[in-house]
Amino acid sequence: MKYWLLAVWLAFAGLAAAGELEKPGRVKHIVLVRLKNSRDLGRFMGLSKRLVELPGVLRYSIGPVLPREESRAGESFDVGVVVTLESRQALHDYLRHPRHREIIESMRPLVANVVVHDFVTR
Image (cartoon, rainbow, N blue to C red):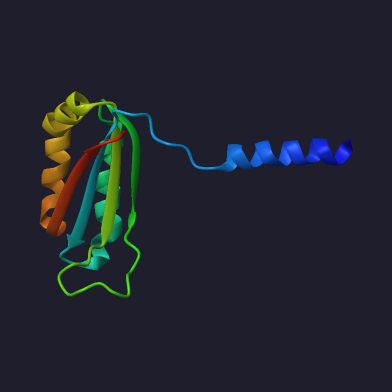
C-alpha cells in the first residue's frame, strides 16, 4: 500500500512539474536584437526592462542569445525579448504607448538590427 501511494504521489508530482501551455489568445511579441557593440548588452537590457511597467504586459523576458554552432554570417543576434500580452488589442496599445516609443528611441543608438515577430497562442 505504501508503494502504491508513493507511485501515485510521484506521478502527480511529475505532472505538476511539467510545462504548461499558454492560455489561448494571448499574444507573444518576440524581438531579436543585434547590437552595434556587444559591450552595450547590459545598458540595452537595463533600458528594455523599463517596458515591463507598461499597461497590458503579463510577462516580460529578456536575455542574451545563446550562441549557435550552425549560425550563418548575418544571422546572429545579441539579445532576445519575449513579451506576453493579453490580446491583439493589448499589443496594439503597447506598441503605441508614449512610454514604449520613448524607451525604444533611447535604445535605438545601440541597435544595429532588429527582427520582430508576433503570434497568437492557441
